[in-house]
Image (cartoon, rainbow, N blue to C red; front, top):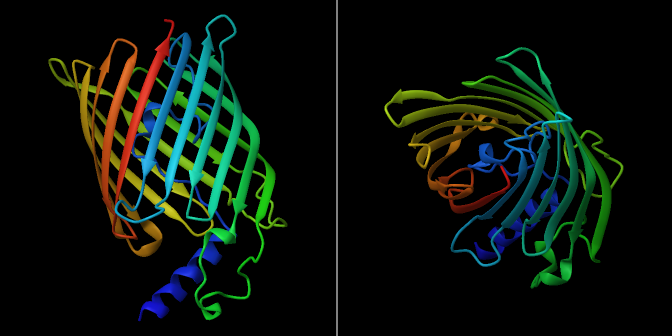
Length: 291
């Protein structure tokens, strides 16, 4: 049984080696440029956002992800610029590093509606090092299992749009536009569609419901989220994430809490369930420099 499980795990890892889909952060609405380059321009000044995610808690060499977003907005030019840096340790031997520059232009459609159009471009660096694995039985591997270290640097581009007013936000984007299938690694083209509201439900209490849909070649996920903000300083929320291509089985549930004081924000998320029935932790830190 142990040998059988090792074989299945190794084959699954080899399949995952040649394709990669984006991780869904539970607190991604606070900084969206890694999902949609149009999601910039929160305020004038520099906005720095850092999130760390630890998956499969309790397992050795579990996946770990770090994301750093930075944006700046100019009211004079109606433009935002930014950068997004992602370091994703997918497994003991596989990792994905992504670096992108972001630009968005804001259009005042009326006194109440704002349209943002964004593009981003950069590079993906995929690597796989088989020497980090200990193969006790050659029968555990498949013919496609790499025998030497593999590393690949590919260009990567995204495009997106957001439409917003005081209470509603709608966004759509396409990521990894090139989707170069001639390379060893394949970063599948991703499509995102989302909407979020922000409404006052009582004195000092605001509700922010949201829906996020993501689909790629073999993945379709839906985030159903609701957040409550007290005095726009304390928040708590719940997220339900079913796997739509698995008949809504293997759903993940996440709870978030956080605090915002002046230009600093700290948040924590605990996620349980999902296809791997795992536990994940997510921690965010956001700092605004300027107005």
